[in-house]
Image (cartoon, rainbow, N blue to C red; front, side, top):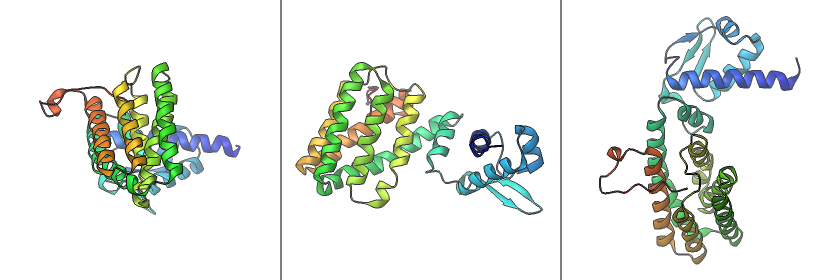
Amino acid sequence: MGRDNRAGLHGSVVDRLGVQITAGDVAAGEVLRIEQLEARFGVSRSVVREAIRVLESMGMVTSRRRVGITVAPRGGWNLFDPQIIAWRLDGPGRDEQLRELGELRRGLEPVAAHLAALRATPAQCGTLTGAVMQMAVHGKSGDLESYLEADVQFHRTLLEASGNDMMGALSGVVAAVLAGRTHHDLMPAHPEPVAIRWHAEVAQAVQAGDAAAAERAMRDIVDEATRAMLGPPDVLDPSDTLDPSGA
């Protein structure tokens, strides 16, 4: 079997097992046997072993001789891994994952915007402005995939512009949130112009060195995006209004 075919097979096994584990269909503490997985997925032992190595690197399983493969509790998973985020968004715990991600973004991105206003390079300021322009073009045309690409570039650049490597390292998490929103039909067909305006306000504030304005506009983006994704008003402050923006 060629390397590409083998890689495709082990990727499929990783994906199917990952979905089952994150959904709770395979419970923490359950022991899996190599031969059982071979039969279940119709693949060779080497493919199963490669898949298990990937899941083990994510903290989702442990493998011990004479014991087998044991599914790890959620506390041991690398919950920041974009693939785990995607699997959780695909499963029954989507609302919980969206809430957690929204809370994480609220604690992260406004602070990153504040720091970016103090530290961003001219090139980063230009990238932010260019990303907003692309968002405006693709938002108007309804090209959500191209809009997503520009949106991800905006948020990744902002985190990197914070000058904090640990914040920058979380850009994959934010990208996974944005992609999940688009791919799970949680975006309006045409992103709201107000959302694009808020992104423009962040870019302008960063370029002007106005840290307070950058932080405030980014908090608006994150709050509205979280409300739009979680949906039902009863999970929010009753005084808030829902506006499904394209953050």
